[in-house]
View 1 (cartoon, one colour):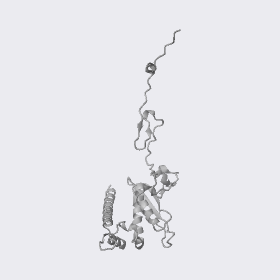
View 2 (cartoon, helix red, strand yellow):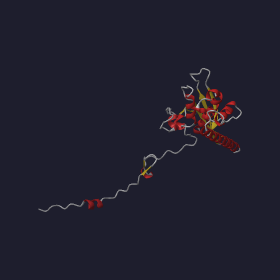
View 3 (cartoon, rainbow, N blue to C red):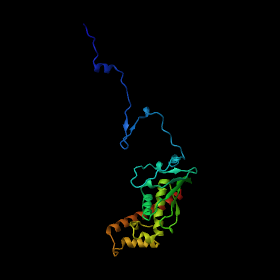
View 4 (cartoon, rainbow, N blue to C red):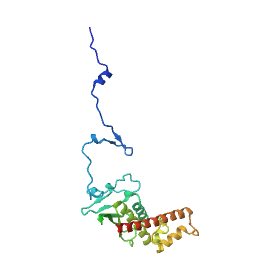
Length: 243
């Protein structure tokens, strides 16, 4: 009895029509598989002029953030109202807003400051009006609520400016209470105030009983950065006014 001949597997495979697949790329940062252009479905949505990053978050609920938060996506922390104002506690930034909130908590505040920003274009230049509101302190009845307004380019830099300014104003309002806290190392801009004099004397006067060389060096470094920042900011304002 004759047995049927079978095609070797490797020979059968060679007769198959080759399937050409475009290579996949893997993003090292997120480890996500990215399809090549020819294998993607719908094309990417083009950017729309005038639609800001904050405006695309309209309708999303804010998720509180703070120290140790792994969620660094600003979209999850911003609410935009019908008039285009973006509202946030800005704690997800981890910078000056977090420092301000840390300082306020040290004085028994229970609610973080709230930031409200509105973007516009003035003479072809982007700008953002930012209002930071400091609530009343429930543990100190004479410490009422207050607010201040600053201007930046976008919400992300504007709430940093607002928080830094609020730290300075809070320190000047409550200079006596700040003196015995770690926040005495925060430098102030206005050199004409008693708060500035007390702060420099406490941090840089080597005759003080609690003088610390490391603290003094850190304070001088922070003060130099503050002066450089203010100088660059003034130059930037002058350049923008001449455009």
